[in-house]
Length: 132
Image: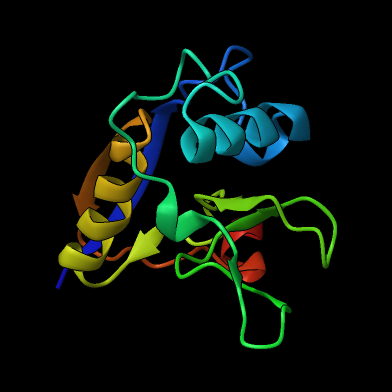
């Protein structure tokens, strides 16, 4: 059995921080550009071919905003959601390599550079073991 770890080498953002840490205005402009095609400025660091349809909220049956198909970090206030973006990794370790590959592929689609490391499980040191 192996454990697989996602490692982010770099985010494509100008400041090198995750997508959720970018200003809301950047994402609003991207959505406007995507919907209106010329309505806003597409971020130069995002791939032009990126399809953000599933990352944008949809209008529900009664005019209520529905969460996007793709779950991620929300951009915008509750009820005024602009879109979601790929989530900053809460979980970096996977027992299933294909699960790690799926997450990495989604991040790479957004321009993230990263890789997967694999290793045998190791025993975590305990406080008693550390004191000896």
